Amino acid sequence: MILIGKISKVQGLKGELILFSTTDHPALLPHREGLLLGPPNVDWSDMDPDHRAIACQVVNVREQKNKPCIRLKGFDDRTAVEPLVGMSLWMPEDQASLAPGESFRHEWVGLSVTLPNGSIVGKVLRLESTTMGYDMVIVQSDSSKSTILIPYIKKWWKIDLSQHLLEVDPPEGLTDQSVDE
Image (cartoon, rainbow, N blue to C red):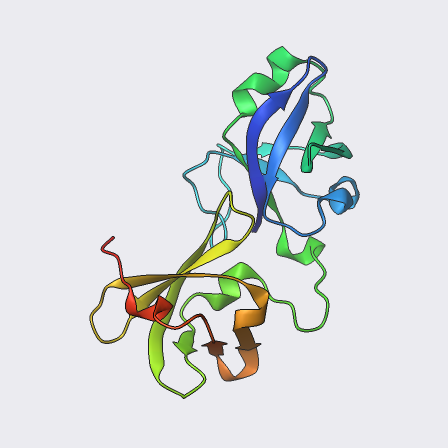
């Protein structure tokens, strides 16, 4: 399963929801099968959904203040969708199509991260969405076992999934700052 986004709030009285999207193409959601809503703290990227999942179908997507606003089949008013706020929207991986050079977020987990000079930064623990419009790549340092937060700014990263490598070229000093988790 692939995380598509999180329901951030109800929009209006007709059952629309604002989606904090992790996909570049939310307008394609009405054409996807097998969508599920799940509790916010459950990660179904590597496991099968359980009884807490709610099957859903997106029937409409429109933009509301630069954010996707979705409407779900069978949820026709504000009262019906209010319990969905905070839930995560998931899609089966086989429903997604990637352009050449693109990758899924879960494919990064465990990959080595290096600098252009070849020195190893560490291994990717996970990617986290941020409200700033980009993902944060959480890297476990090989040397100190602490974590380093590196923004996914496309021009900083070179990805070679066949070699299981990620190269990052961030501003000087960014990989020197670690945080404790």
